[in-house]
Amino acid sequence: MEKKTSIRGKMMKIFAVLIVINGITIAALFFMFFWREYRAVLNSYLKDVDYQTTNSLENNIEKTEDFSLKILTSQEIQATVSEVNAKKMNYYELREYQKKVEKEIAVDALSSSYVVSVSVVSDNENEFSVKKNEIGGTQFGFTKDEIYDGNGSLLWTTLRESNRLCAARAILNLETMQPIGYISIVYEAAYLTDILTDNFVDYAGVSYLVNESGNVMAASEEQYIRKQLGNTPDDLRDREEISYDSLSGVWCYYYVGNQMGNGWTLVQLASVKEFNKMMYRMLRIVIIILLVTLGAGVVLVWLATSHIVRPTQVLIESMKQLAKDDKYPRVQITSNDEIGWIGMEYNKMAENIENMVEKVYKTELSEKQARLEYLQMQINPHFLYNVLDTISWMAIAEGKQDISEMTIALAELLRAIIKNDHFITLKEEMVVVRDYLMIQGERFEDKIQVYYDIEEEAYEYLVPNFILQPLIENAITHGLEPKVGIGSLGIQIKLDQDRMQITIEDDGVGMTEEEVNALRRRCSQDNQGNAIGLINVYKRLILCYGEDSRLNIHSRKDRGTKISFSIPLKQI
Image (tube, rainbow, N blue to C red; front, side, top):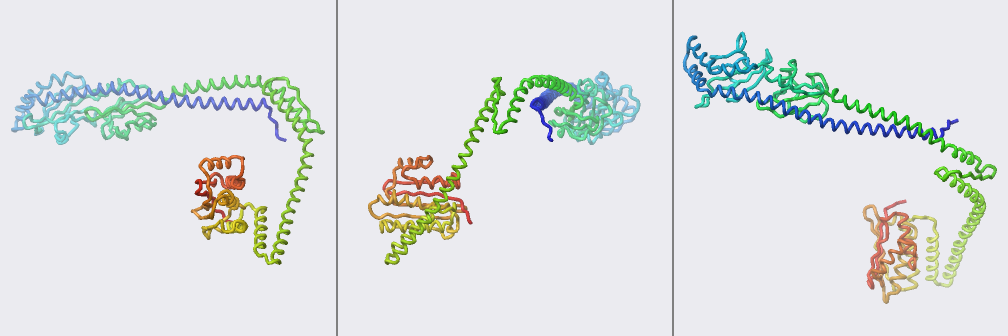
């Protein structure tokens, strides 16, 4: 036996489910909203940090630009390099030129704690360098050809062995603008990395300086320098989805700044793990609130349902006794709330059931009587057929062939009227139409001329039984009969794709626009008036085929009337 569940239990379950669903929905919406807003705050924060850091980096790059420009435009440097290129010199002569170069660049070179060496190299590879606490050969980041290809632009790179920074540019003859040598300045990596390290980025972030190829040229952590980031700055720009950084090994959000003057771009990382910490903390608060609300709600529902359960139990016991031993008990109403309303409706129901039981017997007797009368009505048409058949044979015996044919037509027409089939072929329907028109022809003789325009293929399709005769009768009675003189009646039936187009047209007395509108209103209402057959056809078409098959009525006073409609093609 299936276990029963009380109203109290159901209400508590429903209430608990609703609280959980609402709580989950609120938590999800809160999480989505907070994530989107906090993501926007993060972007704004990283944008500000990028602006400040990029300004500091650009300032150092600009200092190097000014320093190198000062050297290459120096008249002393221009003259010294040109002279060295012009002739071959011995060691002592080169030593004198070395002193001249040192004097020219030493002050600026040694004033910065980040400068490792400053070298001026002639076109014939004579090197004049100023070094600070450096033992060994001078480090260069570019070949002479690479520097000359820069056409005087300041080039930047990172030295492979020491991760130091190297800036180099060609010395151009100020008159011919042809390269006569080059400058190479080597900085400690801290010249730029100190700025990246001081760049305060929350969320355990890392900052990279990346060239156009995606190589890390400087970083806030030295182990990432000269590593391949895996993507170019253009690929990372405006990337909003979570990405995995292969260098730092964390899932992160990238923020890519604008390209700086030396062609490098600042790329900042924000760890997804740190980013989500605050959101998870807020989500836990929402879940705790949800659990507390659920517990309080369960207690309140338990107390509230106690008040509801007692009157419902009384109602249930009364319902169990309903109709037992022909008893229909009522319940006593003790409250004016929904439960009381249910009790009142139950009492009404019990009273109605009792009254209906009393009426059932009478109804069954009435149905039997109606069935007998219906069977008797079926006998009458057969009697009329036999009488008309007798009249037809009597007419033949008297030589009245026209009376016999008219009687046979009347019998066929009567048979079609009471036929039980809802649908017949158009061929069968046209037999009824021709029988009816033959009878009317005897009445009006040559007053009415009938024209047929029917496609041969249409005869095999189904139409509603007795659908055309009422329209033709309406055309004769209200259109042609009142007309003075000969009138014509046209019956046109055409096939148009998947529908049958039917038109009944006469040139009788017609109707005014007001009369046509009044007829249309009667068709849409139950007021039949003097157009019973027409309204009957109208309503049958709507019932059988819907609004697409409604009658279209067009008429002009003293010019005639045209009634048309279309029905879907349907075969047996």
